[in-house]
Image (cartoon, rainbow, N blue to C red; front, side):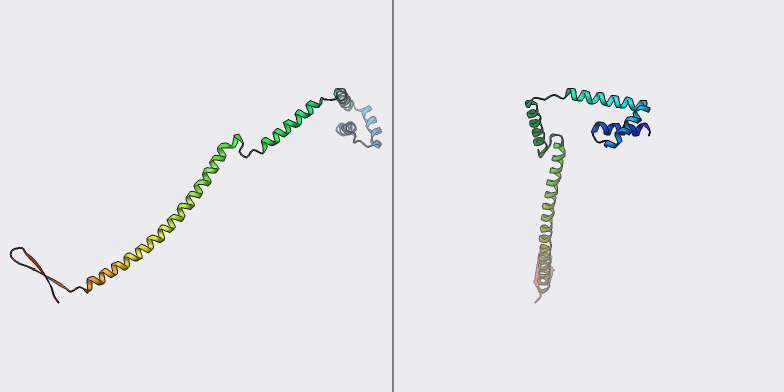
Amino acid sequence: MNTDQIKLLIDKYFDGELEKNLEPLLFTSLSSDEEAREHFLHMNRTRFAIHESDSEFPQSLEQRILYSIEGAAQREFVFIPQKKLPLFFSYSLAVLLLIASLFFYSQTIEYRQDLNSTMVKVRQQDNLIEMLMNSLPEAEVIRERDNEIIIKANI
């Protein structure tokens, strides 16, 4: 068994996950591998230091931790974080410009329809004027010597 496999068994041993039938194999392997023994001693010292420092923490510390977690949770649900404020404004401006462009586009469609109906009316009136002009009798213009212009209608 190589050193890495032994270290894995040591880690499982200190985590309480090593099966009981593998413990004798672990300790026999430790007798022959110096590096694995150093790792075992290091893990044992670490576990001892953790158990020595395992003291009861005050109730006020627990409350402060819980209040700080609640405060962080409430800050996360703020709609506009301070760091993303310019991004929010740029998206808002883009949406407003999009709405304005849609409004003006609809207005231009209405103006186009009004313009088309006006052009139809102008064509009708132009045709009517031309018909009236064609229905009038011909006029004869006579010029006399004293620069007087006389217009006579030929009927």
